[in-house]
Image (tube, rainbow, N blue to C red; front, side, top):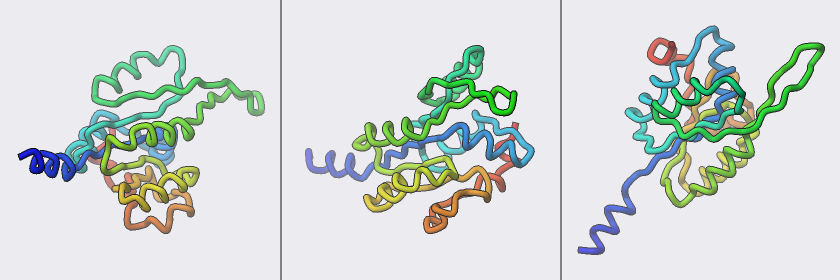
Length: 170
């Protein structure tokens, strides 16, 4: 009996999603639309059975209502401190979350059997390559068709989000 329980437990697919919020948000907005994060979370849950959805996001004072909303619709928000950087007189907020995403995906390694990354950023190439070599890569969700050429060799895993615009837009 114990063997059957273990066998069932080992074959249960536990899918986790790791989202680069800046890449997702800017990628979608570059196409002239806004993503409904609630609809997107539901899509990941129903289409891929995602158990946990980690959203890596820069923390900005005054955005508490956004963060509360994201958590209420099921995201596990991992916050990165941000910096204000002046660029030609314009203040830009920087909060690169790449290291946090890679670190958390490794911390959670034993807890998921398959992973989805939401980003078209080539900086995640080594993580994607590793997941694939270990049989854990399920999908790469790129916000648009302008994803990094480093990811082209993983074309079979890539889902471009732009064709789902009508289903996922605000």
